[in-house]
Image (cartoon, rainbow, N blue to C red; front, side, top):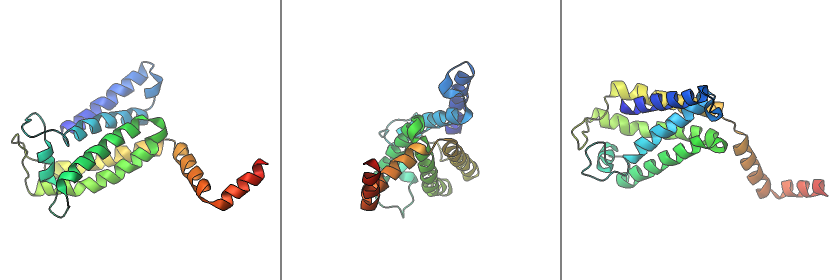
Length: 184
């Protein structure tokens, strides 16, 4: 529930900044993108917290949440932490917001089995707190998916399309030949 509260409060703070004149936060989708970035920095930090810390979940807690069918649980926890941090950075940067939003949708879908496993198996964290109950976790995860998709749909995909278009043109000799003829 704390993660949801962080997302909502951060989004409201950013939108309030927009309301008082900070142009960057003049829209709800941009404010939500930054709010989700704050949330992701918080959640990603748990992936790297050493054992012995009791104020938040630790890396060992995250490893216990990984279903047995996932190989290299320890490495997967580090990887998903890095992906969350990259997603946060991508949401903050206007040019990458579209790609980051859709990538986070895919990540949230991918992470859902771990959250379901932790809830069903009653995985307890080192500080004694249980994993989020399934009745709460599924709607929360759907909300995170929806916010990421909303942010992505509201973002400009032009920088990504331009990048993909230039990569495609550079790899296709026929496109280069056409460009060379036009440039002359």
